[in-house]
Length: 267
Image (cartoon, rainbow, N blue to C red):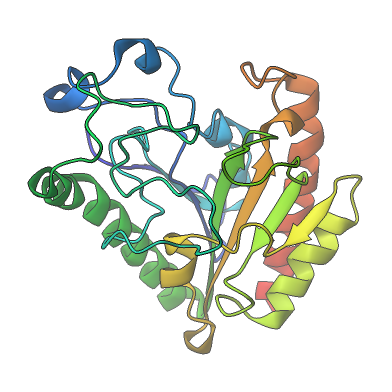
């Protein structure tokens, strides 16, 4: 299985690429036997159904890239050298995590970390191809349109006490402290999201991960934004099952935001 799936636009393309790096639940055969079997049944740190939530995007002309493997294999939104994304004391799982967000051991042998050689193998097999494909798709779109926007999609449990004690807001737009995108596109996205009934934060407590920070180059007409959302906005209260009516409501807000971004990119 390839370390990414490309979903092409089903109508005339627009200069937006949607990335979904954390909705995968698959594990390669060569490592699956090392994991705690009970955790494999429901990989808790998965951005559940985010690929399904955004599946309207190709009909708007948007290309999608989706990772099939679990972030427990390797986290595609972490620094490849395992440099922490935040330094405020929160728990940050590693590039190749050995624990869940709640500090539960992932592996049967309860190893504190993955061996450096194995990390390098996973980097080359899964991480590098995903990032290279993003770069290729962005270059292709920018060549065609002169500019491009990467929208990186994430979701999180409403409460993760190892990150912060209180509930997260509904939506968090991250742009690496306004360095990964033009002010105009940031304003367009924020205005659209805030014109909904959802609570919206900007760069707190998430500023965007490595995907946003590395691919956002607004001086080169290449922009990147990350949207984090709490799972109860499109899943049930147990954060286990896809909730059709909640998801429909959220999809309307996302669609409206994309339409406004498409209009802005066309100027």
